[in-house]
Image (cartoon, rainbow, N blue to C red; front, side):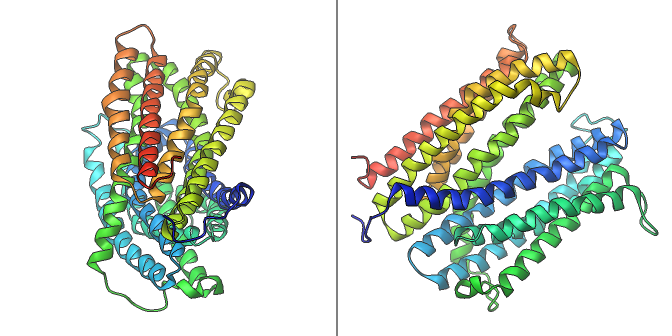
Length: 452
């Protein structure tokens, strides 16, 4: 049984959940906006520059999400320590997370230095290889900053301070435009690097974001009790192992989910440019909407993790229920938004009548999986808060790569469904993931005697 009073109300929990979620949502949209700015600015140079950026970003994003995803482990560990009222442990977790992040960032940076050698093997046209390669080389230098920023972000959000991260993310969005311009068009001794300049601009921006957040945490009194920069601490094998054991499955789960969506365009490529363009528009729209349930899931990880640390099982169960109810309402609103305004939204991307017609058709499939998507990401967020990450990793891999991918390939290539086949595969995968993750959450709660 709980060793802490379980008294809490739905109205209190709803307020706390959305106080956390809203700044996290702004942060998520801001980070997604960085790639959007790169794409728009490269598009104004030439179609070749735009294509080179698409190749570079397509390879950078999965690597970045895999390694920064591992650092999400900081969030449930800090939330648990916050729940047990041990501020000295929070500071230790933050310091040890920075050690892990530094090593992982260096490894990720080295991978990005090597990736250009794989461009010919991936069938990237020779005309795109020089710019895409330079982009990857440049952006690789920013990877240690990306992972260390993710560690500090997880620490700050988990102790209830998501707003500084939000403010820095918004400032970064504004600063990227002049930085991109500087490296794309050159100034004084700086050469004009075209689209590849986006890589240098983004790498510099990532370091500025990390240094700004680190200085803010160091200077601000709100972090005094859990100050990670109060003194030097060597790497501790116990914490390194615990962070990696919890974080590596999170990173892989994110990688499995993101990669299934990014490879869908490759599966559809034999069907022609019009189909791929329509598919990319529909994916782009739903990817932006996905930031809403994803932000809710991060907030759920923090609230569930805090009560998990307190061993306040009844309050933890209440947060889970509220999270799933909130996910349902938000998914229904997203479905309504897509249904009513799909034509206007698609018009922001293209004026081509055929592409518009296909994209609007594919959005109907996106509407069909909103509920499943909201439930599965919320269940995963709750499970992370309970420090259960290995099971969800296997569920994600099986749902997307063992089930969704073959179904999507078969229906799009070997039936008359075309592009819709890939989307049916995604719906099947998300449904399986949703059912299994909810069953896993139910099982964990039953073990704690919470399903009565």
